[in-house]
Image (tube, rainbow over all chains, first blue to last red):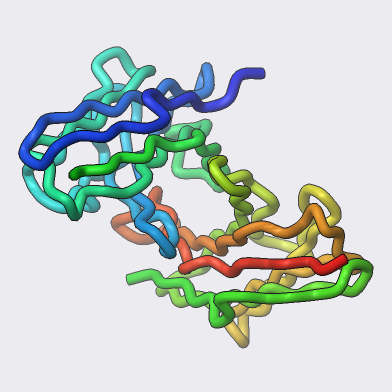
Length: 116
Length: 116
């Protein structure tokens, strides 16, 4: 079956520009997560959605970062006034169950963002 | 706060030999533990998880991991390494009783190279 998909696979932008990154989760997965992976590091949590609502956004680094999931499926991560330090691979994951059970997260291939 | 340590940035092993990739964790409650593998230019792939019960868990591609509560470790193992196992391996932890119960916290990764 189809896995988590992310578009675009690569995004190059200039400092100060606005970008949107899209994630399409596995069908039927109610939970969706965004992580950021910098070079040589493990992924770092950004935000978690249960359905349409952001249940935990404690990982968002500042108010330039925002994410939505209006219909409880596709999600968009939005970054305003990009900075060079935002350059990283942005990973999306999805999982079953709102109950907090031990469900593994399935990851997409990521979007590599480069801010020049 | 939860954390994960992968003390080895790089592990080299000869094909056919057993391999071990080390992971230690810190959480306040009982952890959910995961191993993921990342191939170049691809997303994270789930290998296995420990939730409760038997301390030895078996996963994909012949991998297994041993949970040791007293040593707070969750080392990844395989009896006989293949060249195709060469990849970047991440250990991750969730603390289901914490306020950030749905977040995965990852280690910094261990690059496994299996030499022919």
